[in-house]
Image (tube, rainbow, N blue to C red; front, side, top):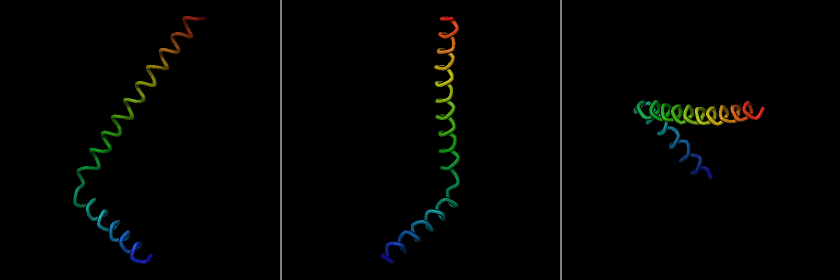
Length: 59
């Protein structure tokens, strides 16, 4: 049990150390997330506009 927690602590310490060493991957991941997010929003907005147009035409 104790050994497991020790491993976990070491793992997290190593991860935080690696993060400071490589500041590059985070912005890339963040940018790709933003891109995906904006893409989803544009699709949603497009679908919404289409529905709105249909509603207007039916009225």
